[in-house]
Image 1 (tube, one colour):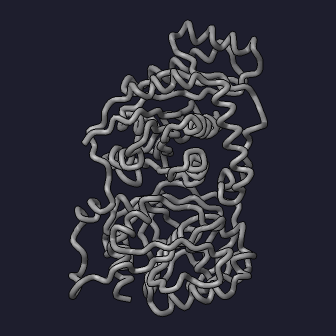
Image 2 (cartoon, rainbow, N blue to C red; image 1 turned 90 degrees about the vertical axis):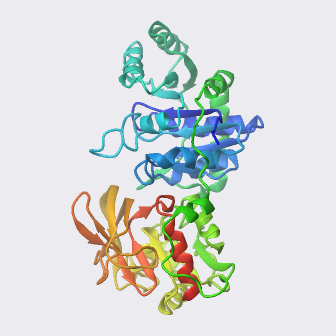
Length: 462
């Protein structure tokens, strides 16, 4: 089955050019016209997809050629875009920027080529006029396989400024699909790890997305952009399917005795403190036989009734440390679940929550480790291998992950570490004890779907 969903990739020469404003605005503007819009984000970013979901009413999905491999980009895209009228893909960093030292791997340009999609280049024109043509010409000609269909000019100061920019680009033969003036209407607040997530400011976020949609609709030629999107090439990839992915994964470690127990309940942390997750994780858990129940550790005093396993993804527990600590009943419930050997998978924020304390405030105490905020940003892709057997993987399983935090956990690894990390320097990291697997690494389970099946199997037997 091929995918011919019309699609656009929104890219830029560099970070800070306005990709998120334009991409989110386009998604919301087209959705406001009654189209089913599929939202996507290049790379491991969890925050932008939250705004994309708000704009479209559909799950924001990531396309990461490093974490999942280039071969899964097309199928994952087709899975998310199934049945849609249009897909908008927001790029990451500059158009040709990818994983450090890996050439084009994980760049927006690579994803655009894998998707056979035209690129719309968002250019911050605030400090240039005729030079914009040289900049755009360079990006349009750098890689002949990347089709730059045109530009949207951002932060244009005046009608005179716009006229100069259009004149220069017309001479260069590059279409201008839109012009956005400088404005404070669509500003979204940031802090130590980027934009503040939607879950923390939903009312304000709704207003911000509406403002983005209005600005883009007023300043861009939506009809011409839709025509460009319809020119995307058909994809040969069949859509990714969680059940099919599990069926093609290596055989399970054990053969169940008798019929498998249905509906094993797996609790997944959500709410404002734990907003980082990939939609495919819960889809894989469900396909493996789990009944997935999302709960909010800021509001609920106990785990969902009948919980047999717990998944705690990333987010901002450091921002909500006082509230998480004050919910002593839930902290004790989590500790009791771990104590009886139930599977617990924790990434980054989840790791901090399982520690003894965070910035001096009591946490769950599952791990004999302390966590604190740091001035240093830890950021980057990682190659990792499972050091020993755990509820997620057997020893020797190789996975790729991503770190993104300004915290430190001491010690950084337990007696049985979770991962041996090869990049950027060899080290061991994380904790495996009883049924707990806790680590700073964010991983994408679509790359290794057996992880979800193994986790659910352990939930059945614990």
